[in-house]
Length: 296
Image 1 (spheres, rainbow, N blue to C red):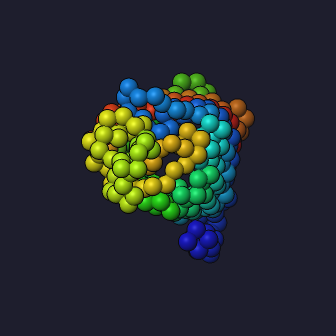
Image 2 (cartoon, rainbow, N blue to C red; image 1 turned 135 degrees about the vertical axis):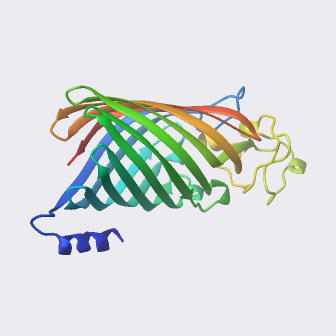
Image 3 (cartoon, one colour; image 1 turned 180 degrees about the vertical axis):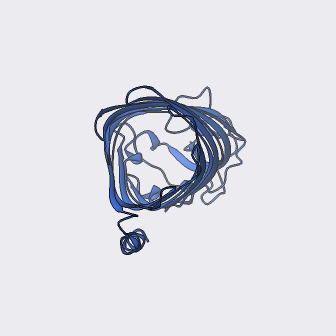
């Protein structure tokens, strides 16, 4: 799909509507807390994270107010403390930016791909659809708001999830090439939770729709209302846990920092704090990442 659109753009290109290569690459490191989404009051597990990504595509400006692009992207992550989450993923990205008038633009994006995990039960295809409005009331200030839908399929049904997210952000240029931002999102859908392995065969119910009653996230008290249950067990921090799905609602607050270094080279840092709840209980999670990137 990406290659077909790229060829079409090249054929349509003229001197007044040039086609250009677009690319990005980056590396980063950080920490993710509560990778098992343990309920409040239960022991949590976290891991350092090393991440890398790269992409190459073609962009086309058929008019001053319109930009189209299509490309291929790779992203990967390494979790030394939770190796089941190690990931290599390939994506096809499509993007349309349409300026309505000078301060307002509509942005529509779609992505589809496949992720390979350290735990093969998590591997499978994924889909992301996103639409947003961008307003630039001042030259140094950008405000965004929109909606995103994500669907993930996996070899084990317990890892197949979908979610709907409403988001907004404010980003300002505080100095030449230096940007500070703050984003918020509200999400509803499915999450993968984990129940402790039952200590007796009588409590284990292979093929049941969720964990045994009384086994909530991280093995704590829960309503046992999960679906998409599994008898699969992972390794490391997931070794004594069985995954299952449950409906959740959560919120995430994310401050960001970016500073241009030279041409397309930049440094970045971000921190996300998530708090959520479901019939299984309440939970929090944190994710911090910093590194360097390049785009053209």
